[in-house]
Image (cartoon, rainbow, N blue to C red; front, side):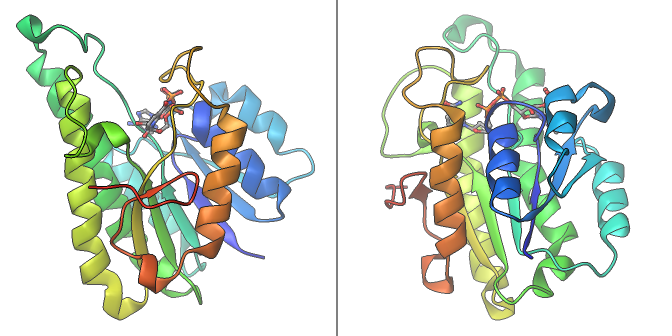
Length: 228
Ligand SMILES: NC(=O)c1ccc[n+]([C@@H]2O[C@H](COP(=O)([O-])OP(=O)(O)OC[C@H]3O[C@@H](n4cnc5c(N)ncnc54)[C@H](OP(=O)(O)O)[C@@H]3O)[C@@H](O)[C@H]2O)c1
């Protein structure tokens, strides 16, 4: 049985990913900030191998405790899914710079801290993979306005994952940022193009088939390569 660890697994895409992997017979380690309030995730435990753990990805103590809790357990796939978006993303006249830092901490730095903290567990897998949920909004190819904090945080995490892919190549760890599609979640909104289930199914297929040759490249939920 393979094991996946998913951050932000209590709602949105993270919850759909937890469901997809669990239904496919994987062991799921599901991180969330408030396990006591994660009712949908807790309900999913029935009939599935889902272990819920407290994980605020911006809290180094939570990440260290998680790594300690895992001990020598092999980890096949790490999905850095937790993410946040600018609350006031269309108004450049009132940028909240403190919020921008918080967005960087969550979207850009936490996936690196998670990847480094869990590297030894990943190395115990025969096919270790890190999938970081980024966004097309961070692509330098996309020239659109607004959401300056979110866009730069996703551009940064794309670069960070490219660096990690190179650093981890000698350990056989595949590292990819992905665009999950425009998804109907609290973040994506009700008008978004695809359901969390559709996105999760695509990401599951992509993660299942990832290999070293695909490392350090930017992919979409549909399995196609995305321009940086
Ligand atoms: N939806 C889209 O169209 C879309 C498009 C491109 C990329 N993405 C990316 O997809 C990922 C998932 O987004 P979503 O649409 O599912 O968003 P969402 O519905 O807003 O859910 C975000 C999840 O991230 C968690 N989270 C936020 N900050 C966290 C932290 N510091 N520690 C741990 N968990 C934290 C939230 O937990 P709480 O419940 O505790 O807040 C929640 O579980 C994000 O990285 C997002 O940037 C989404």
